[in-house]
Image 1 (cartoon, rainbow, N blue to C red):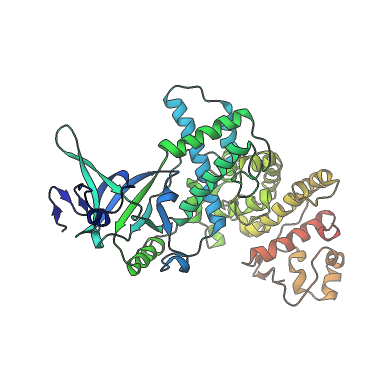
Image 2 (cartoon, helix red, strand yellow; image 1 turned 60 degrees about the vertical axis):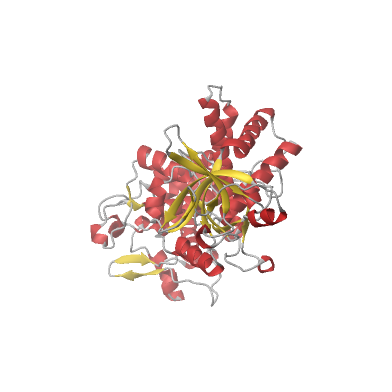
Length: 485
């Protein structure tokens, strides 16, 4: 498949004496860095697999997403995504430092666990391999202009690996992993600024909660050892392709990013042990409260078991805890103090007649996830919203007690408010509801849902609907209108 150069597989060349400028120009430069690599053939194409110190990768790599630097073979950088990866990497480095202490039988201070809880601990950390290309070698590394290398053998004479020497011209052009690269660089800048100033950085902070605060002696110990991990023993795995042209780089980028199958949301939440909201769902709602949770929803309401779909439960709790559509950004320091309030909400929800029983969706509209998001919205507004009223705690207790008194039947005319004319609204006693609802404008979506046979089915555009349903619940219980605040 590939020829050899003496006893070495191409693209490796035996070391040469640097006795002339011609030799120096051909082989690279004297400023070379050794790396131990495995040589493989990914679908027949020669590749290196190597481990690079976490801190060093940004120095020896580049990203082809700037036209001023050459041909573009990458998408634009998404800094928000990279910052999320930086937080994950910071957790991984702290965890690595903690594991090293345990391995050498040194005491692990409580500060390690406190920082991991603040960032969001999880059972395991790992970064997937980064895929790169060295452009300055011939295709596949064959022919002249290859990379210097040595065979590393065991005592039995078997090949263990190869040691290659990468010069300054051997830039690792990132094909898949530019956000991991940028995230790693953010972490290093964060650690260096923190160690230099003794304060948690403001701009580009990995830990926003402590932004600008003084770093305690206990915390500094943790961050110093995380920094050591990044410099010495925590690594990134890199698969290096050899001599690809721009068209090949672009094709490989496409294949790596478009041919994979996205993980089903419910399965992802089920497997994820890092997010504190998914931990709350498993620990408090499923185990303690006995809430029935499944992965796939029955399309036919007659087959409804009363269980909730996991991805819906996650979205409902994202609204309750964060007032967001997803749980990204949730940390233990935010979620844990709020758990008691939201657990109390779920306790009252489970007492709604028909909820959680067989064919629950036919018995109560509260079994539809958009209605649960409406209840979650009220819980957030009365507990965690910065604009909550002064008597919010009192109002929240009134809300919890009033849940059992709300008519969550399909026949409640309040759900059909937008289908009625003024006379019908007056006949149903809904005139005062208009003070709670947003003004009716031509552009706004007011299609809450409709009666289909004996059942009221809410619409699919939940983000438009659940704030309106929350207003209807406020009116039903006698809470102040959110428009008043």
